[in-house]
Amino acid sequence: MADGHYHSIRFDASACHGCMACMRVCPTQAIRVRRGVAAMIEDRCIDCGECIKACPKSAVVPLTASPDGLGRFDCTIAVPSPALYTQFDGEVTPGVILQALKASGFDAVATLSWAGEAVTRALELFLADYGGPVPLISSFCPSVVRLVQIKYPELVGQLLPILSPREVAAREAKRAAAEQTGLPADRIHAVYVTPCPAKMVSIVDHPGMETSYIDAAVGISDLFPLLAPVIREVQAGGADAPEPETSAGLGWAFSVNLPSTLSEERTLSVWGLSNVVRTLDDIDKGRLQRYTFVECHACAEGCVSGPLTVENPYVARARALRLQRTLPARDVTDPGDMRSRYARGEFGTTVPFSVRPPQPLGRDIVSAIARMKERDRVAGRLAGIDCGACGAPTCLSFAEDVVRGAADEADCVFVRQQQLLDRIAQLSERAEGRA
Ligand code: SF4
Ligand code: SF4
Image (tube, rainbow, N blue to C red; front, side, top):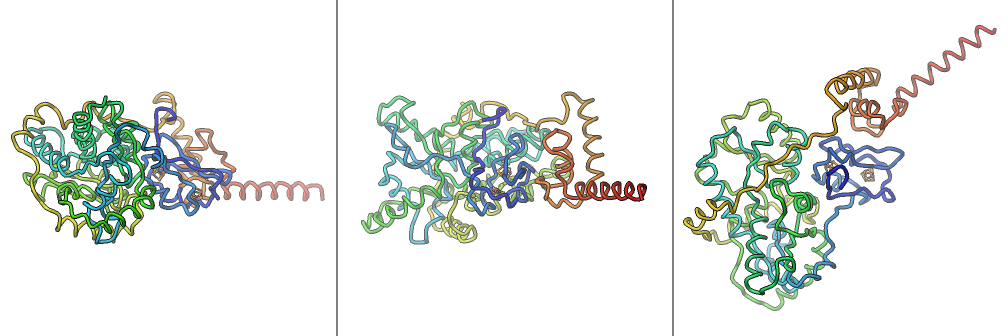
């Protein structure tokens, strides 16, 4: 964590060959490539993982836990993202995957069935009393929350103050394990099997909570090669256990299970970061006030296409839709129980979402304005074609780097070329004067 910013990725300078592919896809202009090596600007990164997908050299490394180190607690509970169910071919049901997780050494496995449904009920109850600004913005994708905190501080109050199903599932599974085993809480660990590195951030530095109920995250891509042979063994064993997952739990892999009380005309679903940014811009300008709820997903196909998944995202999405149709749709929550749990605050976030604006250009407003003017002057001397050759994604971001002292104007090839031409002209003038 640097300057209070924990991140779930790091750049491996020894593997980076400076191609700038990561810099070009970063939605928040958080990457610079200087002296042939990529590096992150900490206070701008939202941990979306787009750079992981773009890097041809695997030089962007997710900081998830290694599956090897998970057995050191007395009780380790796997909390699989429903995205895991979409990574294997159609014959492999969620029930088989959950059995394989247990056979791989996890002491218990928690599905999102109950938690997913419980969160939908909590959302219903919250909306019934809500009278604040709209639209509310879903807070289940950690990258979207970070984007709002960094780029749209005025919208932080519109982030939905309800816990995610993965947090609720981990809490309930830990409670159940403590009752069954009598172990102290610090010997029971919940491990999220994650499709994206951003979930790692939400564990270490959870927005809206003092502490996450999840203790570690292991990437689907890391677990996949270990799980695949165990799945084959489970299938060969022919065990025919009842299906523990429901369509409500699975739905969270790619969409919020919206309450039936919310009409389709009052909700929006937005996929992919460029679309999320466009929508947040519109909300910021007050254009979407006829909507009550906007669910935003950083990944274009939802969690099934996260940077730590292994399957083709369209195949994974097709499987998710099929599973959603075929899994049992039973109602696993009790309305009375939900109302009393909601009233006890079991589903609400416990601390307000904070704003995290990037480092300002100056120490105070006056110096920030002066430096913005200086930045615009520098930008005015640049070619304005955003070629990226300087190692910054745009001419304006390069000008800002120059004003901050992080780059030299002569790093721009066009400025250098002009300097060279000026120097040649000077020398020839001098030579002509001597002639
Ligand atoms: S994780 Fe996303 S925001 Fe962070 S550096 Fe990579 S592309 Fe940029
Ligand atoms: S994509 Fe980024 S991190 Fe990967 S090799 Fe290219 S410059 Fe380096």
